[in-house]
Length: 262
Image (cartoon, rainbow, N blue to C red; front, side, top):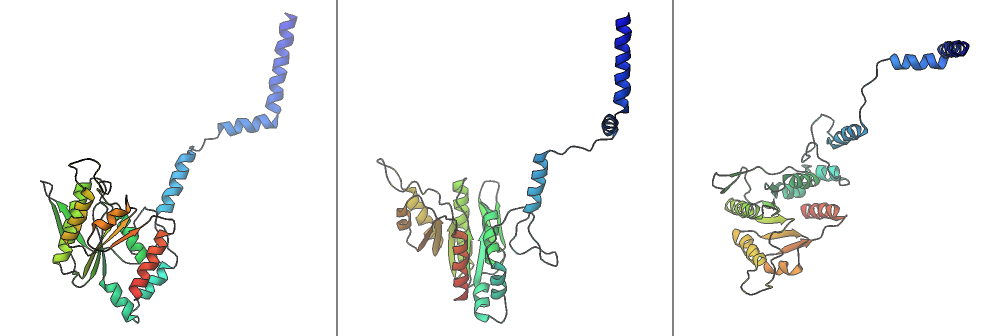
């Protein structure tokens, strides 16, 4: 009994000492306070990334031409100065060259076309593309391109047949609209791997595709990273075969600026 009484008295004394300790009182007070909702680090990083995707706006709150909302855009140095120089009415020669340039986008990769237009400091041309119930493609250019140099950006990525046929119809529509020149910009050239015969009774689809683009009315082709260099020889029209490098966007911008100023 004496042993039990001694242990109970020690426990009571230790309890009084803990309550009198200021550190214990502070911890109890903190535990009684309402807790803030915990936000995971992944959500915080995601929110920060979404904020960085919002494109910058000008002083009056209007987005720059060619910018895509919630999409990262690679900035080209001095593109704003180039845009102002080409749109300056005092520079008649450059303004005339810029007014003749038209860039249209297909449905395969409209984001890429918007960024290209952003680098050039201009907007995409107005074009209407739709498909009927049986899968046929309808294209209508909704602005005058008579005497203009037209660039059609349409990679033949999957589904290859649909996007390739859409490109052919776009070329035909621009040709019938009296465009001065038509350049087919094909970053991904479909059927490029079918560039030779490995067995008997095979088709060379890369040559057939080149013939279709040429006969549709294209005056020039801009291709990128073709499967083999011999695909360039399949075309009966000039082909610009460029390679994807780190400095490629800047070179394209400088090349286009030099073309506009000539």
